[in-house]
Length: 439
Image (cartoon, rainbow, N blue to C red; front, side):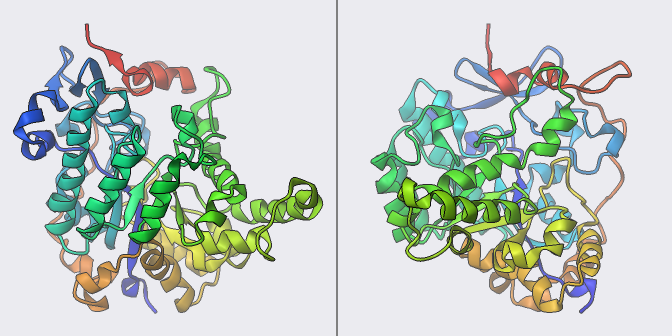
C-alpha cells in the first residue's frame, strides 16, 4: 500500500455560512426575520439575527495561514479561503488534501443549532433552521455526490418538532444529527430525562446517528481569565470524555440498544484510561450503584455504541487495540487551526508508519469505520475506490492555488508581546461568548 492509495473520510469539518444562504432558502414569509450579513463600522462581516450580532468566522477559519497568524480571527470573507464557504471551492481544497468526503458542522448557528434557541420568534427560527438544513443538503451534498455527508440540526426547544425534522430529513437520505452531547448545559432536559425518548426512538427508527461535537459538554472550561489559552487547547478533548462518561452510564443507551454516538473532535488517546477506569468503577461500585450492562463490561459496551476521531494522535495509534480499532475514525477539521491541510495524507502516513499499522488497519481508520459509523458510503457515490483515493483526487487539484494567506488581515488576540490568555480571546471575540445586543 502507498500513500496515494489511501481513501480518507473526515468525520469532522466545518462550514462558514455563505452570505446569501438565508436569502435563497428561507421562505418569503419569514425572510425578513432571517439572519443576514451586515458590515460593522470597523468593516467586519457579521451576522445580525433579531437583536443579536454574531461573528461570522469563529472559530478560526484560518486554513492556509502561516502558524504565527493562526490566532488572527478573520473578520471579512476576503480574509479566508473561498473553500470555507463555497462548496465547489471546498471540493477543490478537499482534492488537494486527498479527502474523499467530509461531515461539516455549522459555525454561526453553533455546532448543533444553539443559535436558534435564543430567538424570540420560534416559528421563524424553525423556518430558518429548516432552510439551513435544506441548504446543506442541496448546495453541499446533492450538488457534489458523495463528497459531503448529510447532517441536520433540530429545534432543540421542542422535542416534537425535532422528531418531525428528523423524519423529514431522513426521507432525503440524511443519516447524521448534530446534537448537544449534554443538553442540560443549554438549560434543556437532561439526557437522563424521558423527555427525549421520542427523539431517540425516531433516530433509531430512521437509522440516524448522533454526533456530539466538543463544546457542548463539560470538562474543558477556562479555570480563570488569566489562564493561558494553551491550557484550554490542551484539555479541550476532556469535553468528549465528560460527555462519553455521562452517556455510558445513562440508562438511555440501554433503553435504546440501536442508538449510536460519534464523539466529534474529541480525540482518541484518552479512551484506554477511561475504559479501564469505567471497568474498575463497575467492579468496585456496580453492586451498590445498581448498574448492569447485560453481562458485559462497560468497556465492551462502549465499543459497541461509540465512535471517536483524531486529527493527530500518535499515542492513539500505538494503543489502537486497547481503544478498539473498529471505533477509530479520522477528522481533518478544515478550516480550523489544528488542521494539517494540505498535507493531511503525509501526516497520517507518517503516523501510521510509526505505529506499524497494517494496510487493513489503515483502511479501517481512514474510511471503513467512518462508513459504518455514519451509515453513508461516499465511495460508492463517487464511482468506486479508484476515484476516491488520495492520488486520484490530487490529480484533479493541480489548478488549486496554495499561496499562503499571509498578512491578509484579521483581529489579533493581542498586540503586545505577551502570552495569550483566555481573557484576550474573549476580548477578541466578545460576540462569540456573549452575543452582542444591537444598540
